[in-house]
Image (tube, rainbow, N blue to C red):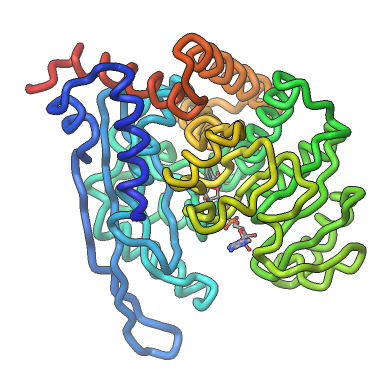
Length: 414
Ligand code: NAD
């Protein structure tokens, strides 16, 4: 199933509960603007390379649009459109004064040099600088992009528009970035996992956890849960699944990744090494955390899943068919638009600090993040109980209600 179709199915299920008429549904779901650009760069060997870049601005009823920038070979308009609409509901669920957007380039950055990635980023900014800005649309890192890419993006944008670091978030800390931004998504995932387990009566020692993907989000979620005494029995990256039924020593695993020339788990010895896909079907897993790609749990593999709790750290990891099967089986799913909202929350704090020319301490960032995530969790939990719906539908109901209210107050047709 295509990514946008998936988000549309979840949106429709929530809109049904809210009795929203079809024309308004269409207005809320349709992206406000979709831009596709040619990005041509000179490779290090002097040859030319052409790529396609996208920026989809979904909705700005609640404020400037906000959303990541992804460099990945699978990036296409459908995926960016789906991710942009997820951002609209996500910023609304955690009640940030933002709308939703997303961008990306269909490219494999692992096959490029650092200089080529810099040229790619600058060429992309040349094409879209007029439609992004601190009051209109504020990009951030996503898969395949990091604080260095954000720094190049800002520098190129400022050549056209002058000094304004609030044009992009996820910047290096010494270049107007926020303390705590890098860990924010994983920390939010970890803290809500602890909260949900407690709410469901699962004791930390019984919460055997497996995490798919050991990048930015996966590592910080693992660290938080390890420190909360949850046994992490498996983690995976592109090189395989690393499994210890008694719980991995996450400090040691993190050290290994740090010392690996490409930041991979490859070669980690103190556990069993299984194929990449084995993580999903491990029998002794109670909490499963997909933290890599979208669309990894589908009708084809859903029956192999044994976990009773799934935390969607990645965007769109479960497609609607698999979601229905898991609901039927009584699996509790913490949806992406709530679970991974810690990143955009601290991006918001970064934007606020940039606009005030003031820096917060790490303690303050963490405190405000925990407060925002807790409040959103309680809201979603109560909405689910009151309406007898899943946490996903409850989160969409809250997001859609807030966006609808803002759109109606502003005047839908003006
Ligand atoms: P990343 O590029 O830092 O890490 C991705 C990890 O997934 C890597 O370890 C990679 O090896 C691994 N991986 C890729 N394919 C895999 C596979 N088939 N099986 C197992 N592992 C695989 O990316 P990230 O920033 O950690 O983002 C991960 C997910 O979280 C994405 O879906 C992203 O959209 C979502 N997300 C990220 C943020 C953020 O702040 N970084 C915020 C919200 C949502």
